[in-house]
Amino acid sequence: MPAEAARTGEDTHESGPRKVARVVLLDPDDRILLLHGHEPGDPADDWWFTPGGGLEGAETREQAALRELAEETGITEVELGPVLWRRRCSFPFAGRRWDQDEWYYLARTAQTATAPTALTELERRSVAGARWWTCRELTRAHETVYPTRLAELLQRLLDEGPPAGPMTLDTEIV
Image (cartoon, rainbow, N blue to C red; front, side):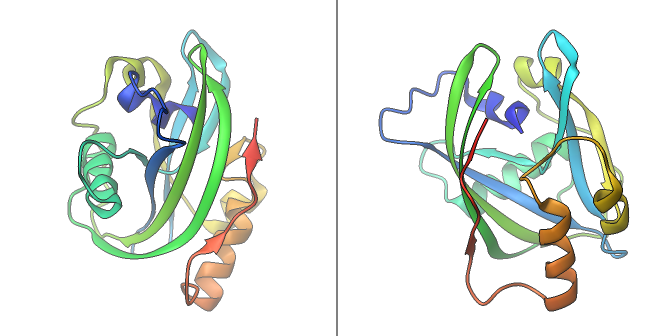
């Protein structure tokens, strides 16, 4: 989760939590794409998280979601859907505390090859790659995954489709 915070290291949070757009990207086989991140300098302190990051300038969350997805994965052939979930979180990463207001967008793609195109220096030191996960693999995983309960949320999404409106997830403070 924290590696995506690295995009705008100069973020001061003067106007509240950092606004973040995240992407629940599904391929034609309903696998979800997750990035593998770790604390810079400590690859053993690791986790998996959805692509995404902070808004830049006057861009919308939708624009940020698509830009971040392209920068972090190289995937640009995307059908962006509705906001599935909203979450507030706070966590330490790279020597500071990050407070974020995250919106998770559903997206679909047939483009499954990944290659980051524009990682920041901090992201290059803290993102170790990407992997497509089935819901079953995610349910059985022993790795740390953010948001918490992602396997359960994904299963519900696959079984029931997107919610009528964004669900508010529990606040996570790490």
